[in-house]
Length: 284
Image (cartoon, rainbow, N blue to C red; front, side):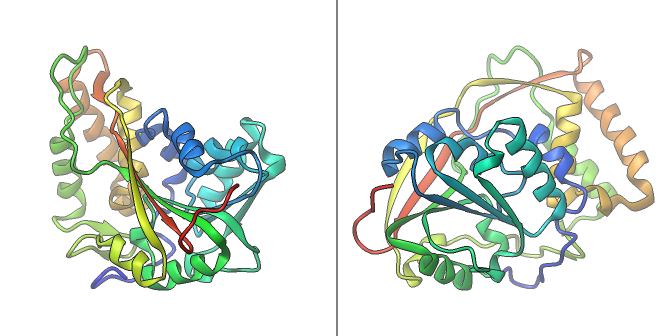
């Protein structure tokens, strides 16, 4: 668990409508890389834990016969349902509003379980052990995140870089110096050391893969504002009656940096760790 903080259901309150637009995508080859690494053949079941608006599960849907996404936020579940319908995979998708700690929730067994930048919010030892029991022997647990150690160059970009430091300072001006998270604050950030957690739970591995990014992305002011409101640390509800003032100041800051309302940045690479329930991966 996160030291000095307790989960509550306002963690991402109001953030769901901004998530798909605001968050940077995973590296373009992620789905194909996972299909190759895991030997996905269009069968089997996927469990996406902390699925958010279904970004990862929907992208992987055509590699499985069924996808199940679990998330505690009702807004995220609504967005996931909408996204699955838009992509034509609603018929093979099930979306469950529940915390990961509520699993197994009668959902059955799975071939693959994914955590896309969500595991750090959970009771990690409990969830890892529960998910291991939900995986078939040889099933894979896949931990996915942006490559945190990567330095993304701003040289040669066609538009100004997103002024992240200035945006963070504006958020602190409105919400205080300590990172907000739901009704609490994160005095010490979120935990790392996932490898030790998965090893304790009985998984073998991991096998590490980096899916390269580096592509130049174009972002508008609206995209950057959506990114801010998609974050737990600056979710819309945290600003209360000052939300309109904050949003006006944020747009003013962004337009002072880019008169065209356009920004550029490089696509992050995606880091993937594959853990196995047992010693040999099972065919999917």
